[in-house]
Image (cartoon, rainbow, N blue to C red):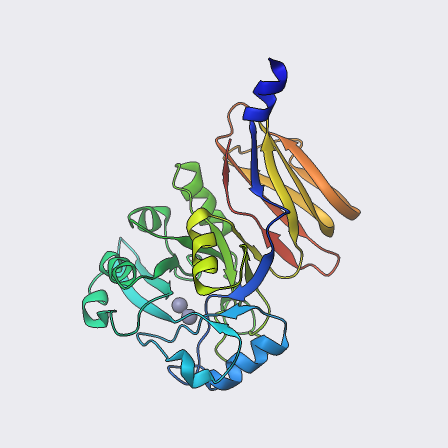
Length: 303
Ligand SMILES: [Zn+2]
Ligand SMILES: [Zn+2]
């Protein structure tokens, strides 16, 4: 009886049986304000060991054929808006997997929701970009329907390319604490290609590195963000979240609990960690950091 109960209570979040593919869903080229051509951008990501790339120029779908590469290119775009909610906020929505001919860009530019809807209608997925940089409050993110993911880290919003507002974990946790959960990705948003490229990634867990496989992983939430460390396995069992990972020095279990004594683990080469959720916690997510200070961020898991 107890054994069956345990089995029912196990949820595999990151399945070690699934291959992991490294990609970047957000970068710019000379198709908008990027400093290199689509061909050069694709060549740099390919050389850096990325498996897939979305070129997401502003308000324009750059034809992946321009990149002349054998890297898996997923057509993309970035849409931008201003909203006033007592303070001015930027809202930037990245679309990946869009159909160049089917995407109605003028209609998409009217409001953020119309942008998400237009991206969806053209077969794409909508990712909420760099909320910390944009000064977004949780209501702005939660007000949008049919988002597929949110960027927890955006390289271009870091120093020296911009202020140090690259890390959006605070506003994302405020959304998650309200029950508004989204898969997590990290992105470069490369513009200058002088260090803002080939740094942060989305890791997609999928049987195959195809456009369909990667978008399906996003739909299922089988993604996480990484600057290098890998989460090899993640499972929820009897209210405890456990991970196996590449060697790290810090593991932090985030949740909607303001305080939890057991949520951090520190050591030299940690390759596994486990956290038992408190009764008041409704979700958990894990962040790991390696010896070089490179981080990885899991998607949220309901307790
Ligand atoms: Zn942006
Ligand atoms: Zn961008």
